[in-house]
Length: 368
Image (cartoon, rainbow, N blue to C red; front, side, top):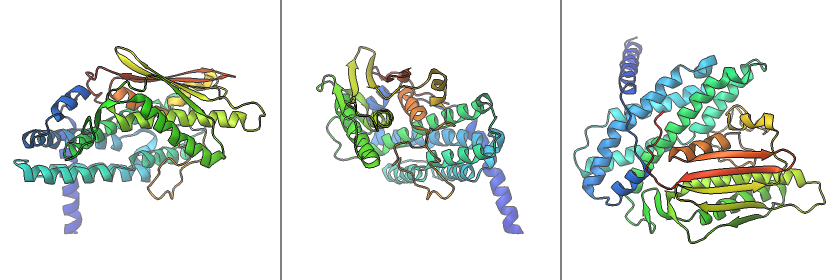
C-alpha cells in the first residue's frame, strides 16, 4: 500500500512539475546563431550550450507531454501513444534530476545523458503513426476530415517540436566531434552542395525502387555542382529522398505494363538570393485536384496497412509506400529553417514538387 501511495504522490508531484515547466517560455534559435555560436566549440561555449539545454529541453518536452494527455477522440489512451508519453515523461525526469552544470565533467555527463534521450525517442514517429492507425480503426469511417483537423494540427506541432529538440541535442553533441568533416559545425554543413545531396538521395531512392519493382526510372539532375550554402545535410537528404521516392513510385506504377519509354524524373536546383529551390518533376500521372489537400495529412496513405500492432518498435521506411507521413514531415523539415514545400499537380500528366530552402539562415525556429 505504502509503495502504491508513494508512487501516486510521486506521479502527482511529477505532473505538477510538468505543468510548471510546460508553462514557461521557449527560446528559439536560428541556423545562423547555431553556426556562429558553434564555430568556436571551446569548453566555455560547450558549458553555456549545455546550461541552455538543461533549461530549454525540459520546457519543450513538458509541453509535448501535456498535449499527449489531452488528445481528442481518445487518442491519448491508445497503447502506442501512452508509450510515447512515457518516453517524454522519462526524459523530462532525467533532465530535471540532473544537477546544475558547473564544469566540464558535468557538461560531458550531461552530453551523454541527452544522447541517451535522443535514442529513447528514435521511434516516436512510427509509434505515433501506429496510435493514429489504432484510432482510425475505431472511428466511424464517415468521420469527416474536418473532425480530424485537430489531430492533424497536434501532429504538426508535435513533430515540429521533435525536429527542434533533435536538432538542439544533435548540434550540441556534434560540437564535441574532435575531427569534424571540412566545413561542418555540429550538424550544420557550412558548404553543403544541394546537387550532391540530391544525387545521393536519388540514388538511395532508386535502389529502394529497384528492390521493390525490379527496375527504376532514371533521375536527371540539373544545376551548378560547385554551388554550396549552409544547411543541415540529413534534413535535405530526408526531404529529397522522400520526394524522389514518391515520384519513382508514381512513374513506375504508371508505366509498369506500358511499352512506352519510361520518362526520367527531373531535378532542378536553382540558387536565388533568398532561397535555394529544388524542383522535382515526374510524369507519373499526377494527383486529382480533389486529392491534393489530403497529401499533407497524417491520416491518409495510399499504402496497404504499412504498420501493425506487433511492429517491433523499429521502422526504417523500407517500403516505397511508407506510412503516408513522408510529405507532411518533409514540409515541417523545410519550414523548420524558414523554407517550405509545395506540390503542384497536373492530373493525367505528372507532379512538380517545389522545395524552398531559406538561404539567409536568420529565421527563428518555429516554437509550437
